[in-house]
Image 1 (cartoon, rainbow, N blue to C red):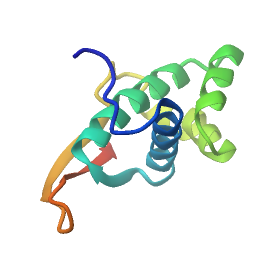
Image 2 (image 1 turned 180 degrees about the horizontal axis):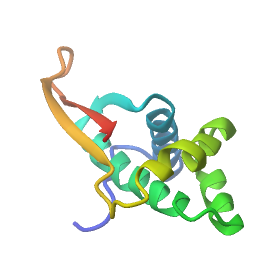
Image 3 (image 1 turned 90 degrees about the vertical axis):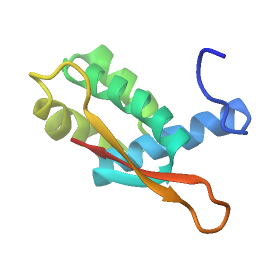
Length: 113
């Protein structure tokens, strides 16, 4: 089935969770989560970085409407996106960690390269 993964959540809950994860990724540089969540976060985070590469009012409004913390959005424009100015995609890396102890869910670390 093409499109986004549902992750066992309603649309609004899923969107809120992914916005939070993307914000946390930009704030800390890396996060530990399940592999399927990491794959969803990767696509959204890379879109945000690509948008933030061009510093226009429209792009700022797009980023501020998605990122949940204002200072993280500023960091995206001032620190994160300039690092990738000469790069066309591939801003994140997913490293698999193995199964989680409680429910054996496949865990991974997603980090900015």
